[in-house]
Amino acid sequence: MKLLHASDFHLDSPLSGLSPEKSALRRRELREIPARLAALAKEEGVDLVLLPGDLFDGARVYPETVRALAQALEDMAAPVFIAPGNHDCYHNKSPYAAASWPDNVYIFTAPEMQGFELPGLNCVVHGCAFTAPRREDDPLRGFTAPDDGRLHLLCVHGEVGLVGSYAPIDPKSLERSGAAYAALGHVHAAGSGKAGRTLWAYPGCPEGRGFDELGPKGALIVSFGESARLVVSSPDGPTFTPVDLGVQPVAAKFVPICRRQYRIETVSLDDFTAWMSQGESPNLVRFLLSGESPFAPDLPALTAQAASRFFHVELQDRTTLPSDLWARAEEETLTGLFLREMRARLNEADETEREKLLLAARFGLAALEGGEDIRL
Image 1 (tube, rainbow, N blue to C red):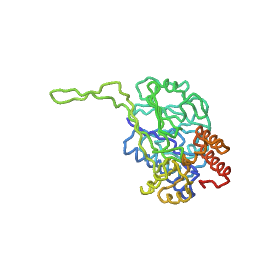
Image 2: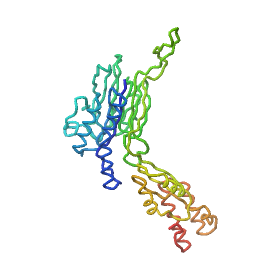
Image 3: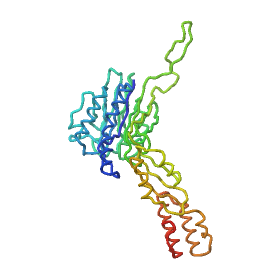
Image 4: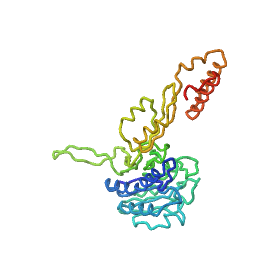
């Protein structure tokens, strides 16, 4: 059996930080996520689709978004299970309750674990719903799937850990669940782990929405029952006998489906010039200009130079003063004392503090010498 696991679409996100035109375009691209997943489901020939929550970003959902999602889920031509999350929690006015959904879509509506049997696949899907924006109890506490020879799967929105405000899932609860696979949602970066016999995974979000969601984004294709096969020679040629060689019977692969990526690139001024010769990119990029420079980079001019080559571009100045400009730090003067103090603070500072300290060093040195800031 094969299933598609995706979550955290956050449809109709406001996408602040972009121009109104680009925000509108990105919202349309997010609205295409379900159709892209439907195409992937058909391409992979999946038997089942698990969507553990946050398909919508909040209470405000456009009717065309709901229609696009419903149509794509119907096009998947496989049973689809949705476990509403903290952003799209289930209540009597939510799209999950108010809209009409295709017959192949099953939506969990209660905070307690529920089970849906799929006899044709010899499996049971267990899941639950957020019914409020926060939940501090473990949704799997006390749950154990029966050892009845069927494949038991979990579809749950929550965070693996002992405490939290978004359905914290104790790893021991996952281990006691007896499920073969736990399809989880909430975390926007792909990741997985194992608790006892249970493989759990997050697919991450299928499209990044900010510089805290970097790199390729997509979904997981999960396969079951792919046991090893032993090759046995015989007079009639090789025969293949299924055997258990201790191979994990659950295999998951990540499939990128995003239209664009958010990227952060640390480059020198020379490397930035080289980037400008690489052609156009569909991505949203933040350049951190590094290295030593006696002059402050002209960020507005460089941004204007890069604007036509990227869907969105930002620049931040992380350059430092050339080391020889700190030569007076060893002088037994007020200037030397000031430079030594600033250098010591810079050596201990994190990235968020360095820019402020560098500015303080520049203006302080200029004030002490009665001149202008050498970098401005």
